[in-house]
Image (cartoon, rainbow, N blue to C red; front, side, top):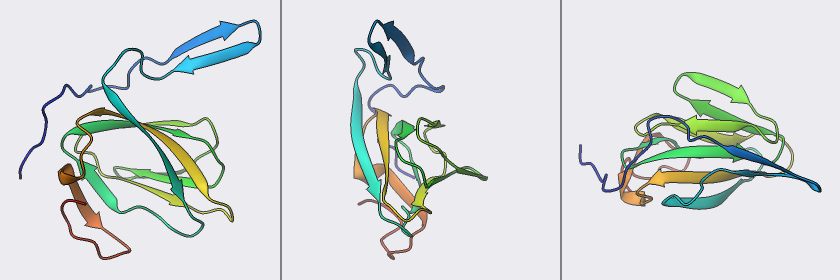
Amino acid sequence: MSTFVTKPIPRTKPTIRRVPRPWGSFQQYATNQDCTVSLMTVQPGQRLSLQSHTARAELWIVLDAGAVVEVGEARRDCQPGDEIWIRANERHRLGCAGSRPVRVLEVAFGNWQQEDITRYADDFHRPARGE
């Protein structure tokens, strides 16, 4: 198994800074850190492959109701605002069980690259490795 790690990957979920303001508040998921931020959208009835990554850990922030998340052996129906920490090499999957698309904000720590993906199951018959 090849490894693509060239940047530090945190072993535990980074501290999320919650900052109150007179108008409300904000949350900082990565403060002055090297990371990649993506907005994933999954259509109703669809799901990502069951996968893992050698070169990154991911923090998922659920934005919409209807998200179904699998991490390891656990499966959970998520609500907006739920935060899911996925360690490097941990199997995970995101799906949409609702009638509207679901969005999840992904903050990836380490090297974000498609070459480090391993697929264990895929509804679209894509290769077990890579993009």
